[in-house]
Image 1 (tube, rainbow, N blue to C red):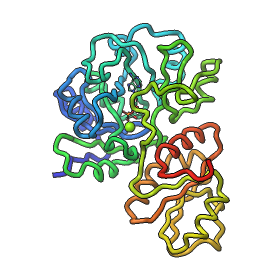
Image 2 (image 1 turned 180 degrees about the horizontal axis):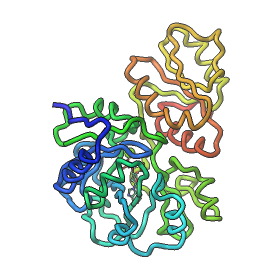
Image 3 (image 1 turned 60 degrees about the vertical axis):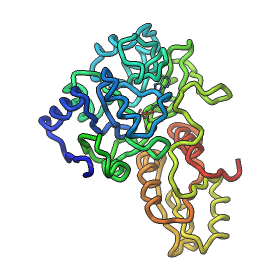
Length: 334
Ligand code: TXA
Ligand code: MG
């Protein structure tokens, strides 16, 4: 039996899902970034179910979702002024902040670290669910570990068709940003971005009035879940440093069945053929919103390859390039 899906959930549906969470169940819910697989963060058994369902390594901690600032004080300590700036500008919204933690949450949530990642989502269903649950909600992205994150409820049905431990899926349409939250660690002096995400580095720096550090820029990996290989489609995915090289590849592989993520107008009509499938975007925000859905669509088509070209390394383009790097089978021209 596939998990039950509630489309267009009413407040009554959301309240009963909140009760499911409070009582140790698992609820999939939409956020403005990607769908989450939620459990009561105070319930170690429920949180363990999340790791099993996702096949997630136990050393990779979960983000704790809250609906009110008062909940933060119960789980985090030493909240620095930079965090307050981020909170007042971006919460509710797609920024996750890593704080020193109080010992109120079970170790399974934080994978035994002395920090906790917290976020207040802006999606109305998510907020109402957390409020109704009356507890903080631990929730990773609702996908099998290492695979592409879900941005529509059908993605969860695809991944977890026979999953008995998911009690309910609240459907909320396509997610607004289509990329995960930006994670900022405020526990190490100058703020450190652990994961690029739906809010750009430039926006964060503007609010803080200072430069931030970015994890991976020469430093060691500090976020347990920032694996080099992640967000991977099953089809070989080739990323090109320039569109020119991608076109060369298309010319030499005319017999192959290929899916391309392409900027509108970048593939000349002379190159189009029956075995070429295009998903086109006019700008970076259109690509951000659709990237994961398109990779999943392509994955179902039995293609030989999926191709994409790197985008400008600014704004959300930087997040996209990061996801390309982690999800690519091979990068051409690096
Ligand atoms: O947009 C999002 O953040 C989505 C929605 C559902 O809220 N959630 C999400 O969760 O992307 P997940 O579990 O797929 O990714 C969370 C990342 C992981 O890389 C994890 O290692 C990192 O956050 N993380 C969690 N707690 C941490 C901590 N205390 N210190 C450093 N990194 C942490
Ligand atoms: Mg994830």
